Amino acid sequence: MAVQLQDKGEAAVPDPPWRTAAAPGRNEVTVIRQCRLDAPGTRAVSVVQHLASLPVWERKARWVTVKPDGPRNGSYTAAGRIAGLVTWRATFEYELTETGFHSWMPTPRRGFQVAGGFRVIDDAPGSCTIIHYEQYHLPFANRLIAFTWRRYVTRSMNIELERIALLAQPVPGQPGEAL
Image (cartoon, rainbow, N blue to C red; front, top):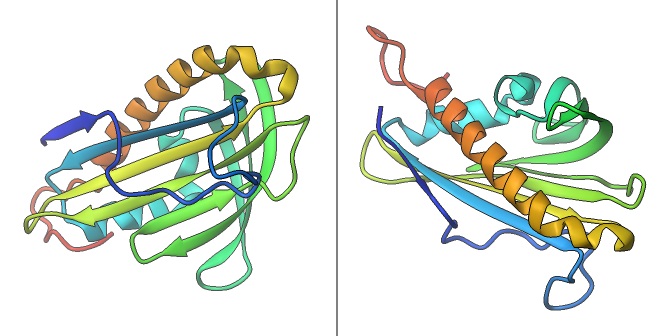
């Protein structure tokens, strides 16, 4: 399995729902990571769109309950621990796309808002690039922790992409079709 982590995705990510200005504010943290892997894009899309499995690859989540509103959208409630210490729980709306998914918190929680998602780009046959982005709007009083938060999220996202890459690998002896 070849996994190459890179600093930034080349593709644009959607603006988060809270952004009203053309540029991000000082209390906004956006982290974009990408990973190229030797697996078909259809497999990677299947992994990231299976939201019930989010706790398998998302380090910050311990459980999730998914409530579809239709075949391509709905909401999910997730809970877990940040850095193994701080408990959290939030509800997100999501939209499945042809290349992954996008989710966002419809309502701020204690001044925090979160949006993020995945975009899978097919490369050569049998390989793809997964772009993962997370966007945070921190409460005004917490904007000084942005640097530390960015480092934590970057490290967490690298591990998430490694886990997704493992899950997207074809099972030995099985055809390389989607999950």
